[in-house]
Image (cartoon, rainbow, N blue to C red; front, side, top):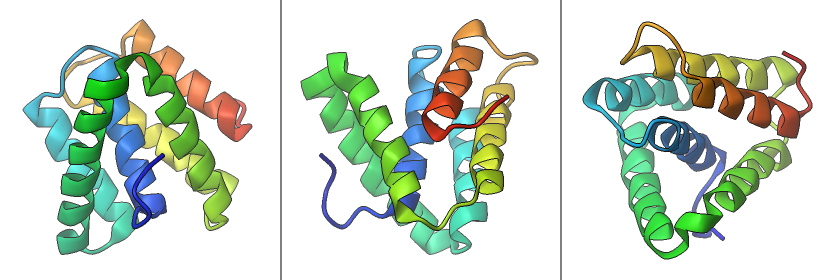
Length: 130
């Protein structure tokens, strides 16, 4: 479903971007900065982070144009790829859910119902109780 060169960090970036775009319809500057900041905490290399964001953003835009009705399939795929990577503990996955909250709060003082539902949905895929 995604390019062969995509790794688990690309899938984190895809999830972060789907979250920012699809829960309220647009990706604003504050969310972009927060996504880059948070992804860099996972990748720990700013040049790699930038490349991952460029590649995943391009892929997501193309996917959304062709399959906008199947974005949930991509979300499920990326969430499962993160699990399949076998490098993230439950604590790491919980931190990713916290990162989503940080993204939501980067452009608003409170989370929307859509943002909360997205986090609950992802937690369910990962088997995490909130």
